[in-house]
Length: 154
Image (cartoon, rainbow, N blue to C red; front, side):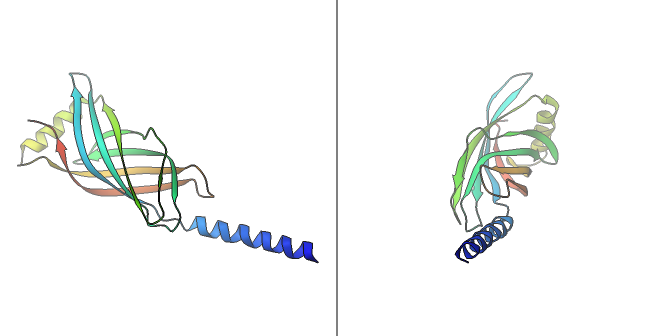
């Protein structure tokens, strides 16, 4: 009888754990800044500073973030973060990622759009998946939009 009760409690814990992790909300991921660190005729390198807010009551152990970055509607770069990190429950974290783009035409279109108006503020769309190191739900998709000042000297 005790064995049945222990087995039943074990099953209940597993089902409760599955229900808790399946209700994970996507973290809010926003771009704080984009700065060009180097450029030549064939490639450009940018440092992107990213802010992550965790709306969940559980910490998010992030293995990596796979993303595609659109600036002013044009696909600008894609990649993965390099270092794992943890976003505390109901907390925030920030990190930098370096992106390389070999799309000189994309950079030229972006600069052309910046020249059409004052300032360096651009619209972005940041799309991808957050890959977790543990838990029942290992991939959380996200799609965030906003605007950011881009550090490009003209």
